[in-house]
Image (spheres, rainbow, N blue to C red):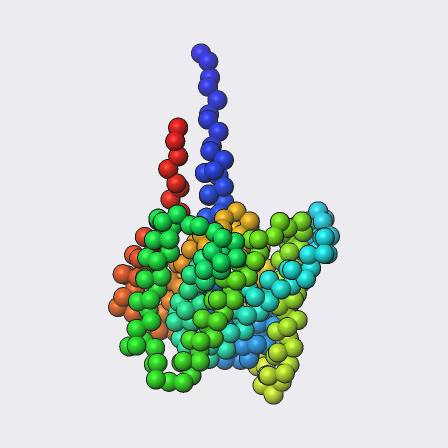
Length: 308
């Protein structure tokens, strides 16, 4: 009897599964980290926390590179300044603005506003790269954003409060700068290995955040509690080192607008964790929003029809 070899799995399917796996790692670590950061901010200033998180993540990645012994720590081809600039846009801006906003906004609301970034990535992609998304994918972005907008109702956010207004402006600026950084990253053919890219993005963002923390939070003491130590230790590895590396993997494989769409479920993770940790009220529109976000994601991720 002749044995037939099992057909090889479609390379496109393998690539799609890899993108989803990397995106899932980013979604789970980033989404769950917003309430954890708010918890840590009881003992430390947001800028000081972000600086420690970024520099600790850089040390973690550097040790990872040294342990692998596959390549060096330095960027190649003069790419250091490019990586540093993208690190400032995607890491320093997001962590700085969202960290300050968490002082006046609930964690779930902050995560929701930050993840309007697929819209900004799509706009910058069309403006800078002349990207043209298929109508179905544009519809998917619109449907997901409609789901997220359900969380912006006045019954949840006190729009008459100046603090809430400033917080929302900060997180929307963070989302816009993140979208710009994602597009700029995708426009360059990188020679530097991914781990070294991650290292230099973290270093650039961490140094800037350290300067801002020294300037703006010098008079705020740090209270070293077991909670703060645990949250910081987790941030060094999960939401910072691993997640930034995984996000670079995603951006190498799909356009920035599609990559941003993959993260649209992150606010839902943040809201669920906020409910568990802080007892935040779960919005009545949560299930409807989850449906819209999921539907929008499916519209973006379903493969295009191909001929035989």
